[in-house]
Each structure stands twice: as C-alpha cells, then as structure tokens.
Image (cartoon, rainbow, N blue to C red; front, side):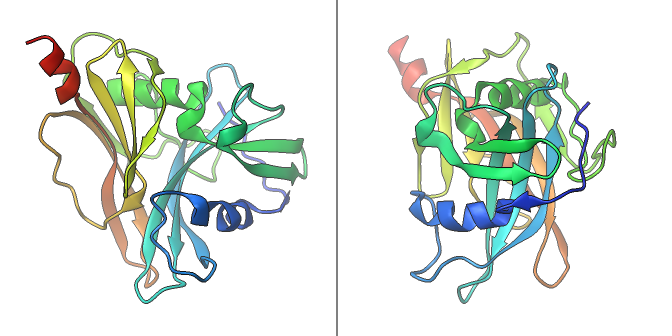
Length: 223
C-alpha cells in the first residue's frame, strides 16, 4: 500500500512535465510552453513498497484547444540503472528527500503492475488518497495465460507509445494524447484500461488509457 504524503515537491510534478513534454514525439502543443493543470489519474501500488507509480492526466491549455496527456510516472529514491533517457527530472520531496521521476513506460515496476491491472491482479488506487480504491478505472483482458512481464524498447507514435511484450505476440499500446469519450477499441484488442479526467470546464469524461492487442507482424512470422 502506497502512503500518500501531503507535502511539498520542488519543483512540482507539473513543473517537471512543463519542461519535459515539448521534447516528446507525441507532443501536440505549439511553440509556447505548455500551461498544464492536473486533470485526473490514478495510482498503482508497488508490491515491494519502493517505487511510486502514478498515471497522471495533465491538460495543456496553452493553445486554442485543450490537449490532454497521459503521463505514466514512477518516483524512486535512487536512479533507475540504464534509464537516463527516461528521466523526467528530480524533485525534492518534503518527507522523502530527493526523488527521481521517470517516464514510467521505461520502468519495469510500472510495466509489471500495469499488466497485473489488465489481468485483475492489481487494484487501481485513488490519486491523492491512501488505501482508497478508484472504482472508476475499469479494465478487461481476454487472454487465458499470464502476460509476459518484459518488453522490447518503447516505440513512440504521434499519439501513443507501444511496447511489444516478450515473448510475444502482444503489443501494449499506451495512449499519450487522450480523447474525451473515445472508447472504441482498435482491431485485435484483447484488453483495455479506461480512466477518467476533468475538462477545463469541470465536465468529467472517460477515455482509453491503455490497450493490449495482437502484434500483426509477429503473427505473420508464423504463417
């Protein structure tokens, strides 16, 4: 169970994301710096109690149309080996001291717990409350066998990041640019996680956060 500390972070998570987001391949903002607000999200628990895991929805209102980003983040008390490319930044936590903040798709702890969520072995937790399940986050998985817990290198697309699970043939598609109330699953989908966030006017919406689907390339290799 993750203990939520209501304390200071310097810089804040949103300040870290403001600097980090414009360099991402799926960033959809303009030349001005993003103007971010936290719009929603949820947490997962690390069974070892060492790594903080958060799926944050941040809305950028710097342009003519709000853009909603999903930022899967992990918080560590020491650097993650060989993950300098995934470092979002460091922050000073009022209770825990220096925390290394990572783009969670590159963190094996987040990957393992997200796959456990698909299978129903992990329970989504409220973003800002200790030991409080978030029942608005829903999941499904049609597979019978346990999912692999490792993946190939992440590949970014204009709106997502995709990882091929090893051994395959399954792709984890993590939505980066969220679309309100877009709930249609892609062809070949065999699992999904949906979540909720608030629009700038306060309207609550839902969207697909992550999808498991068959990898056509891997399937074709066996033909």
